[in-house]
Image 1 (cartoon, helix red, strand yellow):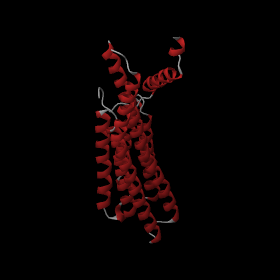
Image 2 (cartoon, rainbow over the protein chains, first blue to last red):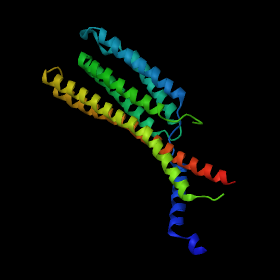
Image 3 (cartoon, one colour):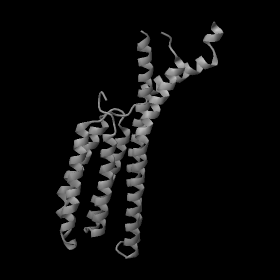
Image 4 (tube, chains in turn green, cyan):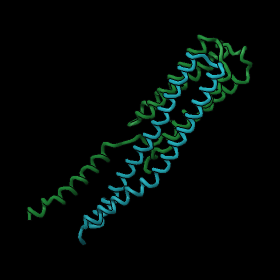
Length: 149
Length: 104
């Protein structure tokens, strides 16, 4: 009887089930947050509009001071998004994405301030890179399961 | 009614495979999209340097930026993988739980 109970096969089955239950308990990805998702979409529109408007202005007139207020406003929005996402459980990956985005925004402010100019090529690169970055963050949020799913 | 562990395990495995079958192609498609977008961006960058539109310092800064954008995009692939694994584990446990419930 005990020989049958402790057979290799039974032990393997129990070990497999125990591993699955343990994995399900500790392997956890944040649930989808519709508010955080909406915030990213709003911020992406703001950033895209910022660079599209900058692109229309002639290159010689793109002094940093003209954009300082908008840079600061968007920086505030990115920080708020970071705070919102840091408060969510098991959300380290999205937080890392927003930290990268925040670092890029800081670099853009610093570079524009130092050079006091912005060439068309860099604006075009920023439109593409921010568009790709926001799309990645949005997709990352969309694939997460909603509560009760 | 007997609890046929062999069948239950097979059903659990099938449930995990079904989840993976649905999610894996989406991940593959997105990875291809990342590579295509980043290579397009790097090509534009190389051409701008060739034309003298940007200096060496800017070129190097932009290369680092491209790497970081790619890292940000790949984190999404990591999230997709983690969600798929979580769904697969949950699907397997659901099968097991339902099999046990059927016995009671």
